[in-house]
Picture 1 (tube, one colour):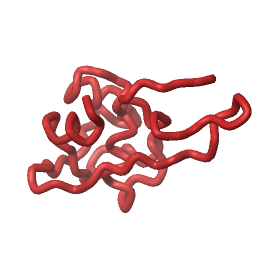
Picture 2 (cartoon, helix red, strand yellow):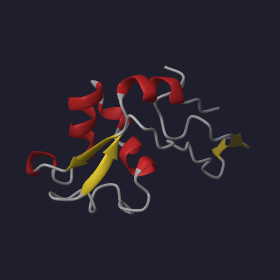
Picture 3 (cartoon, helix red, strand yellow):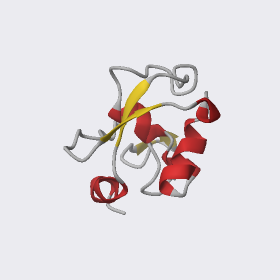
Length: 99
């Protein structure tokens, strides 16, 4: 049986007959403290690197997509320089994910 750590996008998704069930989305709600950020060229196509720079771990790359579903459809190909996205603050993210 697979179990995922609380930083995983699959943490809330169940397992049926030893297989991962249909993905249960872990929403990242908007907050008044979110920061509007323009993706820099050093993070082009690399949400993992931005996650590491902001949160100290590459495993939170999916947070950007969940928080910006109206802007980012593909987690890598849409992560291009000049795109404006909202970034949750570490404290808000910790509360949302139970970290």
